[in-house]
Image (cartoon, rainbow, N blue to C red):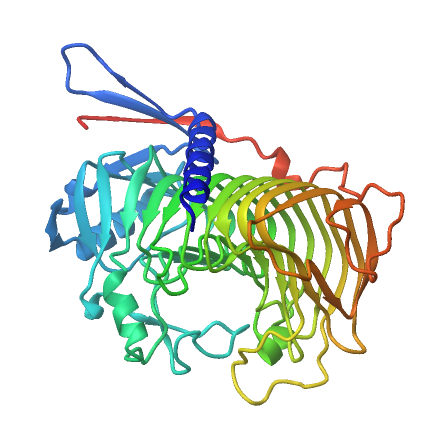
Length: 474
C-alpha cells in the first residue's frame, strides 16, 4: 500500500475511534473523598437485589490461579436467591484466569474496568457441549464442540456487562491447534447464550477469542451494545457478533477488528438448518464500525438455512475491509434472505462495496439437498459513500434461481489508484438502481426511485435500560 493510502486509512481509523468514544454509554464511577468505597452506575435490563464479589468465593486475581471453581460456586450460590429480585456477580480489579462457566437467570455478570477475565489454556477446563441441532456437526471438526468461556442456556433476563472491563480469550493457543489441523472438536466461543430471552451483552472489551466472539442462538429480545472487539486480522474465524436463529435483536454502538466477518447473521447449515427451521428476523444494526481486511462488515450467511428476514442496517463505518453488507449462500442452503434494508454507510479502502455470492461452498456433509435453492429477494441499499475501492460490485446469483428485487440508490464510489477493469460484475441478479456511480451493470437498469427503509420500529428498539449501581471497595 502506498504511503498516502496508509495515511488516509490511519486518519479515517482515528476518526472512527473518536466517534465511538463519543458514543460510549453513561457508565459513571463516583468515589467519595477520603473513603475507599466507590459507586458505579451502569445501564441494564434490570437491577438486582442481591450482590456478591468473586473474591467472596475464593477467587484469586493473579492471572495464574484457576478461578473456574470460584465462578461456579458464586453463580450456583447466587442462583438460589436470583428469583427473589435478581442477583449480580462483580468481577473486581485483577486478572481472573478461568475455564468455561455457566450463567443463570435473573442475573448480571459485571466486569470492573480494571478486571480481565482470562480464558484458560488448560483444555480440561473446557467441557464438551452438545452439537447445535441446526448445524448437525461442529464447525471445526464433525465430532463435537467445547463450551464457550461464558455460557448460558434456557435463561431469562441475563446481563453480561461492565464499565469497559475486559475478557481475553487467549486465543493464540487455539488458533495454532486449528492451523496445525489438530482440533478434533470445535473451538470454544467467547460468549454463547442459547434458548434464552431478554439478554443484554454490553460495555465490554473482548480480545483474542478462540473463535467466534459473541454468539446468541435460538434466543430472542437481545441487546448488544457498546462492545469493543479486537482480534488479529489474520486470526481464524474470530467473527465479532453472530446472531443465529434469533428474533428481535439490537446491535449498536460497537467496534470490531476481526480476522473474519465483523457481524455474521446466521440461521443454520444446509439440511440441519432446514429441518430446525428457525430464522433470524427483526434485526437492527446501527452505529457500528468494522475493520476486517479479508471479510465482510456484515455477512448474511453463509449458514442461513433457517432463513434471514427483516434486517435493518444503518449508520455503519468500515475501513480496510473486504466488503460492505455481503450475502453468502449456495445450492443446498435452501430457505431465504429477504427484506434487507441498508442505509448510511461510509466505507474506505474496500475490495468490494456490494458482494453477493450464490456459489458459496462449505457443507456439513455430502447429504445436503442439491435441490434446496435459496430465495434471495428484497435487498435494498441506499445512501452509501465509499472511497479507495477496488471493485464496486461482484453480484453472482444462482443460475435459474436469480437473486431478485435488488434496489441500490444514491451511491457514490471513488475508485482506488489501481481498480478492477470491470467495476460491476453481475450474473443471475435482477433489480434497479438510481443515482449510482460508477454506472451499474445492465441487470440493474436505472429507475427513478429511492430504495425503501422501514418507517416503523421493531419492538427491541423501544426497550429502555434502567440505571443500576454497585458499590464496593474497588
